[in-house]
Image (spheres, rainbow, N blue to C red):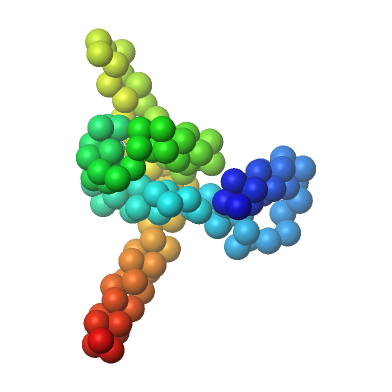
Length: 122
């Protein structure tokens, strides 16, 4: 379903059919790991692939690669390859990615508050 939404929104963008801002935003940040990747890049700054993978031990190499590529395609992260052997690759937020940080911070704060409420109810 998340892929269907992504493809549908990308098609609309290519055809300049901008009819729902929420749909566009959700298509960019939807995905099991995208929000936490963006949040961590905002907190930690530029990170190498292995450092990101280390933060999320349950994520597979394939899924992390896919999520990073989609975020890069959407212009919210940048991928910088250093000409070294072995190659060094770093991921960082673009200005567009930085502009998502207040939203992610609010989501985090809301989640923390909700967890506290649920703990009080138990």
